[in-house]
Amino acid sequence: MPAYYPVFLDLRGRRCVVIGGGAVGEEKVGRLVEFGADVVVYSPQVTPAVRALADEGALTWRRRGYRRGDLDGAFIAIVADTRDSRVNEEAAREADERSVPLNVNDVTRLCSWIAPAIVRNGDVIIAASTGGSSPALARKLREEMAGTSRTGSRYRAIEYGDLAPMLAEARAELSRRGIRLHPDHWQACITDDLVEMIRLGDAEGAREALMSNLMIGSGCDCPDGVCKMWEDLSPDDNAP
Image (cartoon, rainbow, N blue to C red; front, side, top):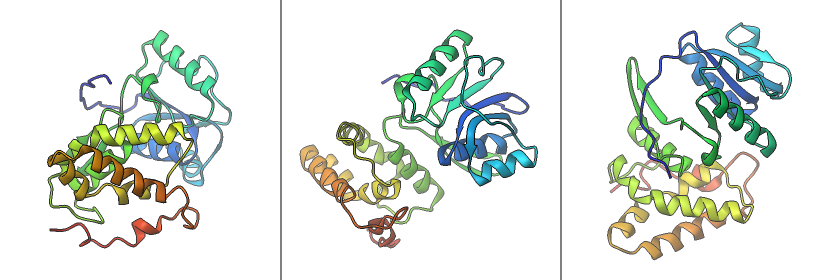
Protein backbone atom coordinates (compact mmCIF):
# COMPACT_ATOMS: atom_id res chain seq x y z
CA MET A 1 0.00 0.00 0.00
CA PRO A 2 1.50 3.38 -1.01
CA ALA A 3 2.04 6.12 1.55
CA TYR A 4 -0.17 8.96 0.33
CA TYR A 5 1.03 12.53 0.80
CA PRO A 6 -1.74 14.61 2.42
CA VAL A 7 -2.55 17.86 0.63
CA PHE A 8 -5.41 20.39 0.35
CA LEU A 9 -6.26 21.57 -3.18
CA ASP A 10 -7.82 24.79 -4.41
CA LEU A 11 -10.49 23.51 -6.83
CA ARG A 12 -12.19 26.84 -7.55
CA GLY A 13 -12.96 27.06 -11.26
CA ARG A 14 -10.92 23.97 -12.10
CA ARG A 15 -12.34 21.23 -14.33
CA CYS A 16 -13.09 18.16 -12.24
CA VAL A 17 -14.48 15.12 -14.07
CA VAL A 18 -16.76 12.58 -12.41
CA ILE A 19 -17.65 9.36 -14.22
CA GLY A 20 -20.94 8.06 -12.87
CA GLY A 21 -23.96 9.85 -11.43
CA GLY A 22 -25.37 7.28 -9.02
CA ALA A 23 -25.32 7.39 -5.22
CA VAL A 24 -21.51 7.40 -5.03
CA GLY A 25 -21.27 9.96 -7.81
CA GLU A 26 -23.78 12.15 -6.02
CA GLU A 27 -21.60 12.15 -2.91
CA LYS A 28 -18.44 13.01 -4.88
CA VAL A 29 -20.17 15.68 -6.95
CA GLY A 30 -21.69 17.34 -3.91
CA ARG A 31 -18.31 17.73 -2.26
CA LEU A 32 -16.66 19.08 -5.42
CA VAL A 33 -19.43 21.64 -5.95
CA GLU A 34 -19.16 22.67 -2.30
CA PHE A 35 -15.53 23.57 -2.87
CA GLY A 36 -16.15 25.56 -6.05
CA ALA A 37 -15.01 23.09 -8.71
CA ASP A 38 -16.10 23.25 -12.35
CA VAL A 39 -17.69 19.80 -12.32
CA VAL A 40 -18.44 17.72 -15.42
CA VAL A 41 -20.39 14.47 -14.92
CA TYR A 42 -20.38 11.72 -17.54
CA SER A 43 -23.27 9.31 -16.98
CA PRO A 44 -26.33 8.16 -18.96
CA GLN A 45 -28.43 8.51 -15.81
CA VAL A 46 -28.00 10.45 -12.57
CA THR A 47 -29.73 10.74 -9.22
CA PRO A 48 -32.38 13.43 -8.71
CA ALA A 49 -29.90 15.42 -6.62
CA VAL A 50 -27.28 15.44 -9.38
CA ARG A 51 -29.94 16.32 -11.94
CA ALA A 52 -31.06 19.23 -9.77
CA LEU A 53 -27.49 20.56 -9.56
CA ALA A 54 -27.25 20.32 -13.36
CA ASP A 55 -30.55 22.15 -13.78
CA GLU A 56 -29.28 24.90 -11.46
CA GLY A 57 -26.11 25.27 -13.53
CA ALA A 58 -23.91 24.10 -10.65
CA LEU A 59 -22.38 21.39 -12.86
CA THR A 60 -22.36 20.10 -16.44
CA TRP A 61 -24.03 16.75 -17.12
CA ARG A 62 -22.98 14.86 -20.24
CA ARG A 63 -25.71 12.23 -20.74
CA ARG A 64 -23.47 9.37 -21.80
CA GLY A 65 -20.82 7.08 -20.43
CA TYR A 66 -17.08 7.69 -20.40
CA ARG A 67 -15.17 7.94 -23.68
CA ARG A 68 -11.45 8.25 -24.17
CA GLY A 69 -10.60 11.94 -24.32
CA ASP A 70 -13.04 12.96 -21.59
CA LEU A 71 -10.16 13.64 -19.19
CA ASP A 72 -8.63 16.25 -21.48
CA GLY A 73 -8.03 19.39 -19.43
CA ALA A 74 -9.13 17.81 -16.15
CA PHE A 75 -7.47 18.99 -12.95
CA ILE A 76 -8.59 15.83 -11.13
CA ALA A 77 -10.92 12.96 -12.07
CA ILE A 78 -13.06 10.46 -10.20
CA VAL A 79 -14.54 7.18 -11.41
CA ALA A 80 -17.57 6.87 -9.16
CA ASP A 81 -19.37 4.11 -11.08
CA THR A 82 -16.90 1.21 -11.09
CA ARG A 83 -19.20 -1.59 -12.28
CA ASP A 84 -17.42 -1.79 -15.65
CA SER A 85 -13.81 -2.85 -15.12
CA ARG A 86 -13.00 -1.96 -18.73
CA VAL A 87 -14.00 1.66 -18.08
CA ASN A 88 -11.99 1.68 -14.87
CA GLU A 89 -8.86 0.48 -16.65
CA GLU A 90 -9.29 2.75 -19.67
CA ALA A 91 -9.84 5.82 -17.49
CA ALA A 92 -6.75 4.90 -15.46
CA ARG A 93 -4.67 4.63 -18.64
CA GLU A 94 -5.87 7.98 -19.96
CA ALA A 95 -5.30 9.65 -16.59
CA ASP A 96 -1.75 8.30 -16.50
CA GLU A 97 -1.04 9.48 -20.05
CA ARG A 98 -2.42 12.96 -19.33
CA SER A 99 -0.95 13.18 -15.80
CA VAL A 100 -4.44 13.70 -14.35
CA PRO A 101 -4.74 12.67 -10.69
CA LEU A 102 -7.38 9.92 -10.60
CA ASN A 103 -9.51 8.36 -7.89
CA VAL A 104 -11.32 5.12 -8.76
CA ASN A 105 -13.86 4.49 -6.03
CA ASP A 106 -12.99 1.40 -4.00
CA VAL A 107 -10.33 0.26 -6.52
CA THR A 108 -7.22 1.44 -4.71
CA ARG A 109 -4.69 -0.05 -7.14
CA LEU A 110 -5.93 2.33 -9.88
CA CYS A 111 -5.89 5.43 -7.67
CA SER A 112 -3.23 8.12 -7.69
CA TRP A 113 -5.08 9.98 -4.92
CA ILE A 114 -7.44 9.07 -2.09
CA ALA A 115 -10.42 11.13 -0.97
CA PRO A 116 -10.16 11.55 2.82
CA ALA A 117 -12.96 11.60 5.34
CA ILE A 118 -13.34 15.22 6.41
CA VAL A 119 -14.89 17.23 9.20
CA ARG A 120 -15.46 20.93 8.52
CA ASN A 121 -16.35 23.90 10.68
CA GLY A 122 -16.06 27.10 8.67
CA ASP A 123 -12.51 27.48 7.40
CA VAL A 124 -11.23 24.71 9.67
CA ILE A 125 -11.07 21.29 8.00
CA ILE A 126 -9.78 18.07 9.52
CA ALA A 127 -9.11 15.21 7.11
CA ALA A 128 -8.44 11.56 7.87
CA SER A 129 -7.44 8.74 5.55
CA THR A 130 -6.77 5.02 5.87
CA GLY A 131 -4.82 5.00 2.61
CA GLY A 132 -7.75 3.29 0.94
CA SER A 133 -7.48 0.24 3.19
CA SER A 134 -10.84 0.68 4.94
CA PRO A 135 -13.57 3.14 3.94
CA ALA A 136 -15.54 1.95 6.97
CA LEU A 137 -12.73 2.98 9.31
CA ALA A 138 -12.43 6.34 7.54
CA ARG A 139 -16.13 6.95 8.24
CA LYS A 140 -15.63 5.90 11.86
CA LEU A 141 -12.79 8.40 12.26
CA ARG A 142 -14.87 11.18 10.69
CA GLU A 143 -17.80 10.55 13.01
CA GLU A 144 -15.57 10.36 16.08
CA MET A 145 -13.86 13.63 15.16
CA ALA A 146 -17.18 15.33 14.47
CA GLY A 147 -18.75 14.03 17.66
CA THR A 148 -21.58 12.40 15.69
CA SER A 149 -20.75 8.76 16.35
CA ARG A 150 -23.82 6.75 17.30
CA THR A 151 -21.85 4.60 19.73
CA GLY A 152 -19.35 6.96 21.33
CA SER A 153 -15.98 5.56 22.37
CA ARG A 154 -13.59 5.32 25.27
CA TYR A 155 -10.70 5.51 22.80
CA ARG A 156 -9.40 8.49 20.86
CA ALA A 157 -10.13 8.47 17.13
CA ILE A 158 -6.46 7.93 16.22
CA GLU A 159 -6.33 4.80 18.38
CA TYR A 160 -8.78 3.13 16.02
CA GLY A 161 -5.91 3.08 13.55
CA ASP A 162 -4.83 -0.14 15.28
CA LEU A 163 -7.74 -1.83 13.49
CA ALA A 164 -6.75 -0.78 9.96
CA PRO A 165 -4.80 -3.93 8.93
CA MET A 166 -7.49 -6.25 10.28
CA LEU A 167 -10.32 -4.30 8.63
CA ALA A 168 -8.46 -4.29 5.32
CA GLU A 169 -8.06 -8.07 5.51
CA ALA A 170 -11.74 -8.53 6.35
CA ARG A 171 -12.75 -6.29 3.46
CA ALA A 172 -10.58 -8.30 1.06
CA GLU A 173 -11.97 -11.59 2.38
CA LEU A 174 -15.58 -10.49 1.91
CA SER A 175 -14.74 -9.24 -1.58
CA ARG A 176 -13.28 -12.66 -2.48
CA ARG A 177 -16.52 -14.26 -1.31
CA GLY A 178 -18.61 -11.81 -3.29
CA ILE A 179 -20.25 -10.46 -0.11
CA ARG A 180 -21.31 -6.81 0.05
CA LEU A 181 -22.50 -5.40 3.37
CA HIS A 182 -24.47 -2.28 4.20
CA PRO A 183 -22.04 0.50 5.25
CA ASP A 184 -23.96 0.91 8.52
CA HIS A 185 -23.35 -2.76 9.33
CA TRP A 186 -19.61 -2.18 9.07
CA GLN A 187 -19.96 0.69 11.53
CA ALA A 188 -21.88 -1.47 14.00
CA CYS A 189 -19.03 -3.98 13.92
CA ILE A 190 -16.19 -1.50 14.57
CA THR A 191 -16.18 -1.48 18.35
CA ASP A 192 -14.04 -0.56 21.33
CA ASP A 193 -13.82 -4.26 22.16
CA LEU A 194 -11.82 -4.87 18.99
CA VAL A 195 -9.38 -2.09 19.86
CA GLU A 196 -8.98 -3.52 23.35
CA MET A 197 -8.31 -7.05 22.07
CA ILE A 198 -5.68 -5.78 19.64
CA ARG A 199 -3.99 -3.79 22.39
CA LEU A 200 -3.97 -6.86 24.64
CA GLY A 201 -2.27 -8.87 21.91
CA ASP A 202 -5.29 -10.98 20.97
CA ALA A 203 -5.29 -10.21 17.27
CA GLU A 204 -6.78 -13.59 16.35
CA GLY A 205 -9.64 -13.17 18.82
CA ALA A 206 -10.33 -9.72 17.42
CA ARG A 207 -10.33 -11.03 13.86
CA GLU A 208 -12.74 -13.85 14.72
CA ALA A 209 -15.08 -11.48 16.57
CA LEU A 210 -15.06 -9.02 13.66
CA MET A 211 -15.74 -11.66 11.00
CA SER A 212 -18.49 -13.25 13.08
CA ASN A 213 -20.30 -9.94 13.45
CA LEU A 214 -19.74 -8.97 9.82
CA MET A 215 -21.21 -12.25 8.58
CA ILE A 216 -24.44 -11.52 10.44
CA GLY A 217 -25.01 -8.84 7.84
CA SER A 218 -24.68 -11.29 4.96
CA GLY A 219 -27.77 -13.25 5.93
CA CYS A 220 -29.90 -10.86 7.98
CA ASP A 221 -33.54 -10.01 7.39
CA CYS A 222 -33.05 -6.25 7.42
CA PRO A 223 -35.19 -4.20 5.02
CA ASP A 224 -33.40 -2.75 1.99
CA GLY A 225 -31.24 0.21 2.94
CA VAL A 226 -31.46 -0.47 6.68
CA CYS A 227 -29.09 -2.17 9.15
CA LYS A 228 -31.04 -3.11 12.27
CA MET A 229 -27.82 -3.79 14.21
CA TRP A 230 -26.80 -0.17 13.58
CA GLU A 231 -30.28 1.23 14.20
CA ASP A 232 -30.51 -0.62 17.53
CA LEU A 233 -27.32 0.98 18.85
CA SER A 234 -27.67 3.83 21.30
CA PRO A 235 -25.09 6.57 21.97
CA ASP A 236 -24.24 4.89 25.28
CA ASP A 237 -23.70 1.34 24.00
CA ASN A 238 -19.95 1.80 23.54
CA ALA A 239 -19.35 4.35 26.29
CA PRO A 240 -17.10 3.61 29.29
